Image 1 (tube, rainbow, N blue to C red):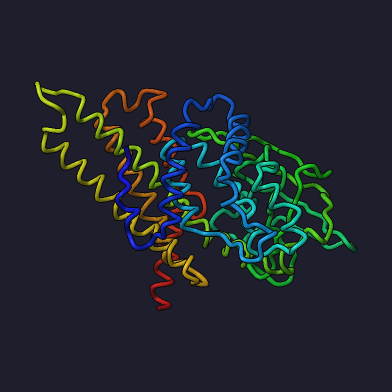
Image 2 (cartoon, rainbow, N blue to C red):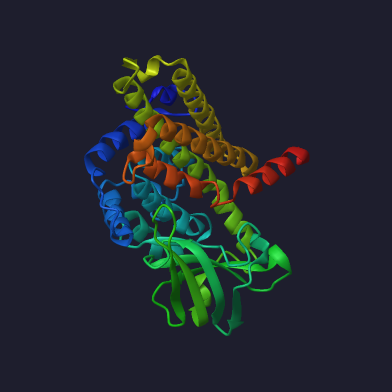
Length: 384
């Protein structure tokens, strides 16, 4: 059983504590035995399950409620809990939020009404199409072109490493519209997956199987009403979305780390070495102490950033970057210790700590690699 004492911290309100307790019970009953053999089918199934549990209503705002907003603490608690139970469940939830986040934050009333109820009900799967072959961390270098043609835009170019690529029903896509050089010449669009001129050029495979793809656009025509915000707002929109969801990546890493510690505690109590429980070895006690310390430090950074955003801060770039950098890097360390303590079982295919070892690595890259987070922290610190 994962530690829940952190829920008593002043970052949370009673509604967050109730959410965490309710979700843990739901996940225990509904996420056992997910078949990861076909990740596309598994993600579709998980979106349906999450919608049935009404968890997706946290992933996007309710367009019928003028007071509805994204609650970052709730998003983080959900991702932490889902990651602790099943990495693909966390992925499925996260993409509904990240993929539609641009609409929640910047969509018109019509755009919100068209797409967000489908996201919240699991009837449409979302994707966030930012990365290109030559522009991962360097967002300002995006080359995919959206050229105005009367009442339409015509898309030409590629995106890559797009999560939910190939199974999403729509993509929040960022393209160059040319209002100005660099970051000031980007715009954001809602792109349905069934358009002529859009194709899945390649499915991409990673050490932790997720639905990923390279997308190709060839004279793909979209109506001007697909534009999110104004022309040239694309960089601002992308950074605002990441400012919300970057903390949730840290929360997912925290969930992976908590599961690794849970598995380790069980292992060191049940496994005997030299006639005594493994935990009696002082070196093992030292490893467990380091793991617990890294987890609590991560949680403090994660929920500070989330609380600050929910409290009305316009931007939490520094705090979110700190949370993501520390939590993902140290979750890797925690899980590595769990693998080591499990010995041969820790590297046996299908064992939970082996799957955690594969799951955690990508979190140190996507939504801003660890080195990029250091740049953000350094620049924000200097600016202050």
